[in-house]
Image 1: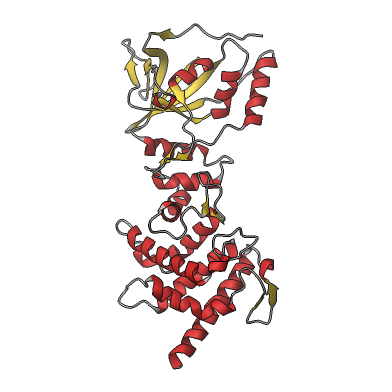
Image 2 (image 1 turned 180 degrees about the vertical axis):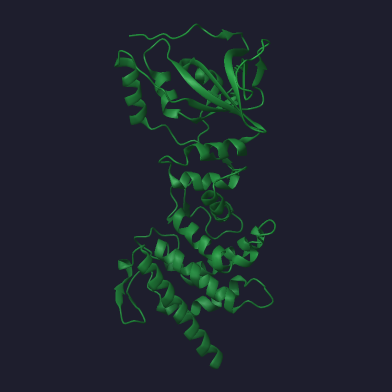
Amino acid sequence: MTKTGTDTPSMTAKELRLPALKIQQGPDRSLYTFAMDGKLVPQIATVSRIRRDGDTQLHGYQRPEVLNHVAAIRRYIETDASPLLPNAIVIAFDERVRFEPSKSGDTGPGYVQTGILIIPITDGPEHDRPGFIVDGQQRCAAIREANVEAFPISISAFIANDTADQRSQFILVNSTKALPKGLIHELLPGASGALPTPLRVRQLPATLLERLNFDAVRSPLHRMIQTPTNPTGHIKDNSVLRMLENSLSDGALYRFRNDQALPKTGEMLTLLCNFWSAVEQTFPEAWDKPPRKSRLMHGAGIISMGYLMDAISHTRDENEGIPDTEEFAADLKLIADDCRWTEGEWTFGDGVVRKWNDIQNTPRDIQRVADFLQSRYRAHRSASLRG
């Protein structure tokens, strides 16, 4: 079964020329709307799947193709008598793509121009295509694989200055869909431009998480945090983000936020690396294990220890200095015997006794462990000062 569409667009050996509308949406942002055979999309655009190179630099921004979804769309295209895919594919082009306005005078609104969109065709590697698919990955894959001669589709495109702009647009386009939160969090550090307030608020903690996870020299949490590009990590990324957000809000990291200028991420990372290095020294038996074997690596452990980090930093806040690893370790040893990360029972101050692996990642359990650790720390420190 074959399906054909409109006439073949003008194509030379090196470029594709397509009738298009240029829609001015902002002072420096234009949207280009045009139609083309979906079978030709792989010649001008690719999918930039998220990955990290040998230097842990992030590349791309797309999720892998969802095979079941692709197969369902393909069956629809191949078997329906009159298939319809009304939603436009969204493509981010680089500056090699250009628009030539029509020579005839336009009679429509001032924000619309007719013309020709000129897209270069490259023979090199896939990643050298001028376009990246921002939305519609599964539809493009289904059309590519479908047993049809052609399938015309609608495309909305924009020209992005750099990869950071492409990532921002990808986040914005997909933020209302069921996009994995971990993917958004991993993309946020490299995004630029205007973002919705909830995402902008998470950009700084996401940046700190990235540095903690991929700084092989300084970070004791190197590759221990589970993300789309580091799926074998034992610690859930959301647990670390919550720990960081709590501290940035009103904890030890707050004073480095520098709301009137750029945040002091260097000082933040020094404090975080010092503290978690001390945690590793104090609790080696519970370090870098799956949460089912260590509640220290569990959401309840990570978040509650973050509160303890804030308490110790506040206690040792002398001339706004940053406690070093040895200072953090000295204070953590005060409460080490009270902790039950891998075995035994927690005996909380209110008389409640809980088996170590009964602690769950719930607000109530997190608050119970956090309050217990801080109260025991203050009691032990007071006793040591009196002694």
